[in-house]
Amino acid sequence: MIQKKIETYTFFAISVFFIIIGIFTCIDGTALMELILFLLSIGISFRAIVQIITILRKRRGKIATTLIESGFQLLFATFIQYQTPLILKSITIVFGLYILIMSALHFINYVIYFRYHIRGSFRVLCEGIATLIFAILLIYKPTDNMKYAEIVIGIYMIFLGVSYFIDFIQMVLPTRITNKMKERIKISLPLLFTVFIPQKLLFRINEMLEVEHDTDDFNASKSNSSPDIEVIIHLAKNGSAAMGHVEIAFENKIYSYGNYNRHSRRLFDAIGDGIICIADKEKYIHYAIESKNRYLVIFGLSLTADQKRNVQKRIQDLISVNTADYYPDLQLYEMGKIPYGDFDDMSSDLYKLANAKFKRITRGKHKKFFVLKTNCAMVVDYILGSLGKGVLAVNGIITPGTYYDYLNKEFLITSSNVITRKVYTKETL
Image (cartoon, rainbow, N blue to C red; front, side, top):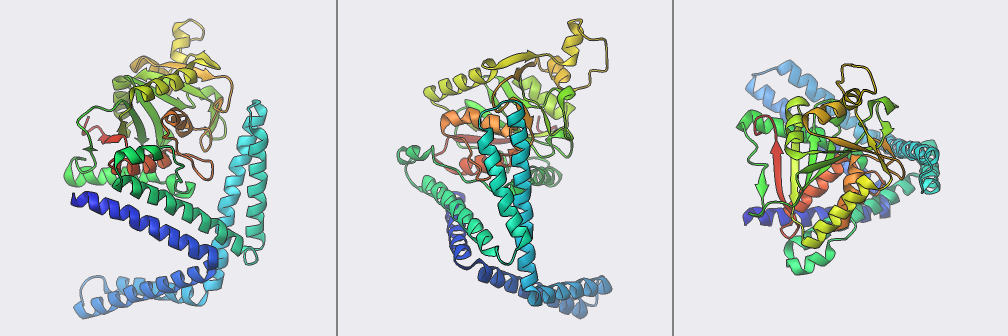
């Protein structure tokens, strides 16, 4: 009960914080940032002075190293205090560069849409042009256009705060009332934060394993019943899952979208054919953990009979409409179509070890895989969209980190149908 109250009040506090900060940012973001930088400089100075006094009183430890470190902290605090306008200008330029990256992603996506005759290419082009103009204005004249950046950031923070407030409402109101709120718009964290969530989560799990030798503090269930559908998030130190990978497990099958055709990969493997992998769940999980050295974070959801039918229809449409069979190299060799080779690609491994079948998407926005746009998370969003569980990212980009952040919040809401959270590793398999 205490834990539930803490979680509830935390959601409320976060929502109020974002809304207030967002309003002040829209009104006078410059003054707010000046105050934050002033408090930051005071805090750094106070910490440095405490370190100096402590080390001089005790006369123990690395005195010289501590004094040098504290000196640099005082210099940094002084720099913040007297160069606030320069820092504010730099922050605006950095924000402009971030928008410029978003614009580049829109243009890459437009090229994919245009080349493969995918509907919606004109909208993607307009988004790219609009974000490019905004980015240029912020970078070229940061001081003059700082106010526009403040308004955009302020509005975003207000919406993020409202999203957290709705989460809070769902935690305190009866289920019969909150069920009507299931299809609300969800505001996700910015791409800049969500792409790093998988690595932070991996570090946290490793820390639990090293200190406690288990992950019981992370594993939890809100119900005695088994979930009807699961969302699986992959974590890895490096390789294709370094930024995370997300997929669906339903009726003992894994449905995973990715760039499974190694011969089609371009732009450092960021672009390639969009292919759906359909594999046996248990064999696939063992392969991912034992052969690929991954950790899996699995969220389980309970479904009604109607929701199950909706999910079945979405999955069936995904794998049977505008698709063609794709055969990995090992299977092509067995069919006598190519000579013998190493066959060390992931699709061949899955075919051999997890009874995997593959469907290449031949038409539509998922025809081409693009790691920061039409990626694995977008297909999961399409499937869960039938439940009112889709995640709407403000920047139009959904990542595995976005999905972890969203599902973890839903798990903390008592009335939500995200009922289980579990980590699978070699130690817990």
